[in-house]
Image (cartoon, rainbow, N blue to C red; front, side, top):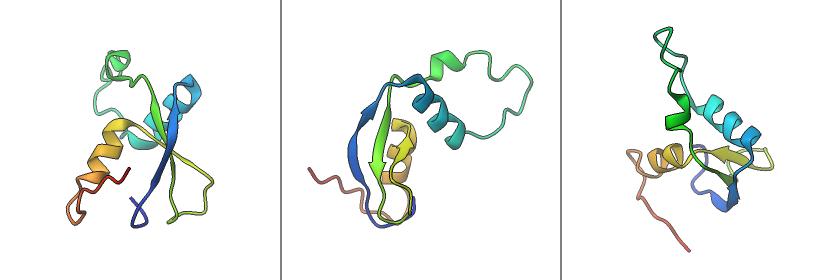
Length: 81
């Protein structure tokens, strides 16, 4: 959650973007059959963000990771529209 704010630019339903965001935010499976029900946990979309704290043009994050970051200790949990 680098930086002090991010700008939500949109969402993507592109399968490659969803897979990338999930791979970037997941830890390796602990057990050999752990990934069997991944489709049940697969988000329908990912959020496209601009993060002034990085040099990347955009970031892709799952809604779950976005919410975890927003509520992380030390944040004020703001959302500004």
